Amino acid sequence: MFDCHYDLLTYILTKKDNPEFLKTYCTKVYTKNNIIGGIFNLFYMSEKEMKEEIGITKNQINIIDNLRKAKEYIQKYSLLSNDITYIFGIEGLDYLENIGDIDTLYELGLRSTNPVWNNKNKFGSGINTNEGLTRLGQKLIEKLIQKKIAIDLSHSNEQTFWGIIKICETMKNQGYNPIVFASHSNVKTLCNIKRNLTDEQMLAIKNLNGIIGITSIKRFCIKDVDVNDKNIDFVQKYIEHINYLKNLLGNVDNISVATDDMKYYYIEPEYYQNANIFSHDNIKKPLTIALKNNNYTEKEINQILNTNFKEKILKALK
Image 1 (cartoon, rainbow, N blue to C red):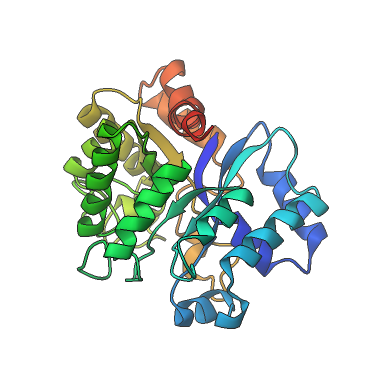
Image 2 (cartoon, helix red, strand yellow):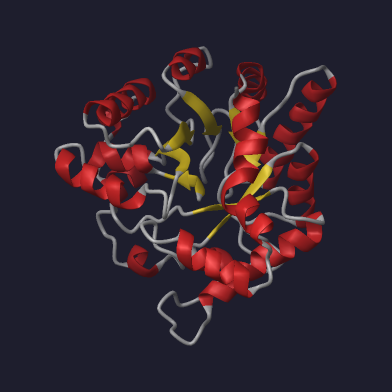
């Protein structure tokens, strides 16, 4: 399957002193029987969160250097085989020095970015704040469209989301081809949390030929749930989000999936051990079985797990 969102680059940088472990880990996860490609991200939160949650301080944060180091590390230790199709992403541009640095990041392989994480930055606002795109943020979105870098709408609040959509629609009318998607967001109608999307938002993404990556984080599927509750059929709750989206959009053409499994690298990982329905290193087989049990055809399953993202996003990036 193709994984719309996994923070592998941050994981590499936090585990860089143990290359043999990382190689074993990647060899286990990225195989023809599990994950055959993905968007691999560096992710950035506030300085306080970066230090408390993953042990990275501000003086260790340089977007260009971090992307370069992660890329060189993958190549040096052959972490990913030639069979794995992947692109680099950055989740949260809080530490971007200036918009011109996008050119350098593009040369390093950047092809996807979330302009914001949950907080407010110089470009716009995430789900924890109530403002929208700034003027600088508008210029950033225009730059990303011009560079053919995919814009990931996950984590944007509604004001920022619709500000991005408006610019994309305007520039599409000017002859550009904006590439938009939500890498790891679920259906707000079924689970009313800030990180999920309204019907109108999901339809707007479809209208721009984008993708919604349904994530198996349990609390994105059921609000305020005890992630350790063994009486809940979490797999079926996850599939219900795919079912809803299929009915809303009319088909599965704009649906994909994302792992965003964070249990491996947090300093205090207790919550994350059972936060996801599917494990990052074992997702394709159980997800395929679940989709079959819900009467999805082989073609639809292949679209959701593989071809939709490749056809709508990866092709557009070329």
